[in-house]
Image 1: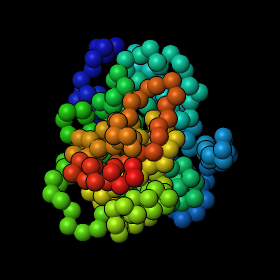
Image 2: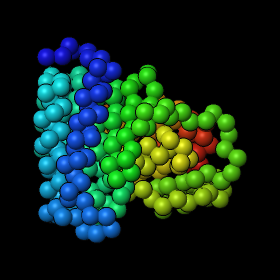
Image 3: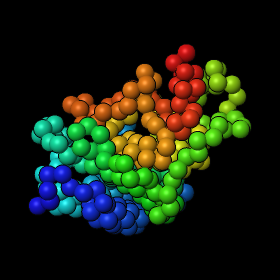
Image 4: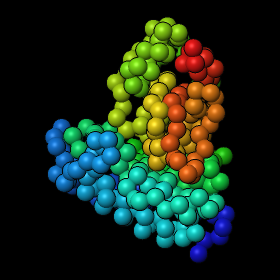
Length: 266
């Protein structure tokens, strides 16, 4: 058994490999531009789930639990076990973030894995198989994509902000911030945040009711790259609460946060 405070550097290679293997498991079900080969059904408020989601969830739970047996578990596709609330470390996983995209042949879906300690992510892995991009961050140690360091510029943007998110939120931002460049909404919320971290999106907007598993890994990747994800009152997300959902949020480079969040509050 690993020690109670494991080294993120020692855990990261195995978690990275688990994410890659999960991607390999998903690929036979994916049909670019077409309906998935996986069985598909709906849960809750018309939220799609496929047999691929379940297969990846089962695989990742086995792999990650073996890596850190004392950690709790919170996943979109596993019945919630309240015992996680008493655990210092908790795995927070979305086996396929962007299931609707996956099911309809859109490339923007990803495997999201975070290890949270005392409510804050300390390790984040996000793997987008179709784009062949693997994002990784460790608390206090930086963020990378495919082995290259991610670091957002501290300089002010010289043109209109590139914004991605739900249209009502983009409309609200533009009313106060002025004209923005509207990018297509990225169906995987985790990838939307990761693209802020790599600088291809300046402002990522998030509707209310995002869940821990949607954002935990990407939150750490963004922060370690020099950005921030906050709710509109300026508070940072806290993870592994009894109800793992969040209010409206904004993801930006730290240099843009004061202006952008001011516009969203108005």
